[in-house]
Image 1 (cartoon, rainbow, N blue to C red):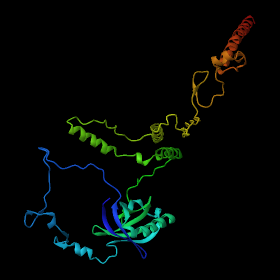
Image 2 (image 1 turned 30 degrees about the vertical axis):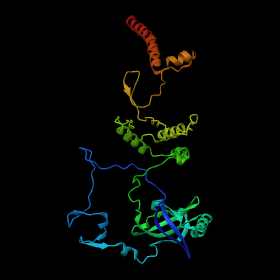
Image 3 (image 1 turned 135 degrees about the horizontal axis):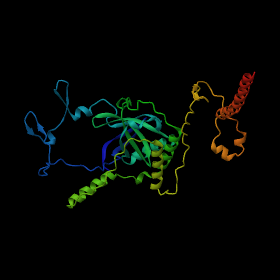
Image 4 (image 1 turned 60 degrees about the vertical axis):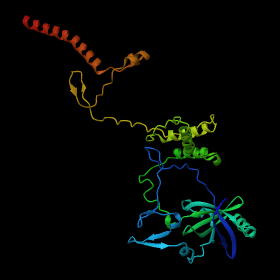
Length: 357
C-alpha cells in the first residue's frame, strides 16, 4: 500500500519511524458531468481572473482570503517552518479506555506501518503495551495543513490510527430528540429486545453495497444497448398505527429470513380492554298506571305479573304467585256485584212492608 505521510510516533523518549497508509478505500461509483444534448464531457478550466488565461497546476499555489477580499499568499515553506512538534510526528499525549472516545469524533482511518528494520522493536513494544493495557493512545499530528487529533489502537498485528474531530467540532444534539411525551410499554420493549437479538446475530463480512451493485447492472445493461432492469419500489409506509403488531411482524420476518420458519413469536400478554361502566340505577320515581287507569307518582308496591316463561318452567309458579293489583281489582268487583242483588231485594221487602202498614 502506498504511504501518504512519513514521520514518527513519539512515545515518551521513544521514537518509532512509521509510514501512514490509508486503511479504507472508496468503492462508490463516480459519474462525470456531460452535455445532455450530445454527451460531451463538461470540464472545468483553471483560469487566472487577472490575466484571463488558463494556468497549469505548476503555477497554482495557496492563499488565504482576508475579510476585505484580499489574498495573502502562503507557501509550503511557510507551513513547514511552523513551530509545532507534530509537523512530522505523531505525538502520544495520553492513554485512555476505548469507551471514553465518542464515536461521533471518529473520521478517517489509517494504518501505521513500521518504516524499516530499526522500527520493528519499538513498534512491537507499543503494540503489545496497548494490548495488555486494554487502552488506546490519544495523539496529536499534523496532516494536510492542519493539526489533528488521533486515536491509536491495535488491529490484528498492526497499529491503526483513527482521525478524531476536536471536541468543539462535534455539535450537541439540541432540538433533535422528540419534544413530545411518549410512554413505552414493557411489552413493546420486550419485542424490541427480541428483534435486536435476531438482527444482531450476523457476520458483518456478509454485508455489501446493494445500491452500487444495482447501479453497475444499469451501466452494464445500457452499455450493451439493453433496457436497464426495473426493480419495483416498495410501497411507501404510512403511519404505524399498531406498534406491537409491527414489532411482532418484524421479528417474524427476521427469523424467517434466517431460515427459522418454525420459530414463532411468543405472544405477550396484552392489556385487557377496560370494562364498560355499569349505568347507575335511576332513582327518579317513574309514573305507573293504577287500577283506575290513572298515573300516580311514587314507587309501586305491587308485584310485577309473572312472565309466561317463568310459568312454563315452574308449574307451581301460577299457584304460588301473589295476586297482582289487577287481579285484586277484578275479585273486588265480582264480590261487589254479588252483594248488590241482595241489597236490592232487601230494599224491595222494606218498601212492600211500608205499603201494607
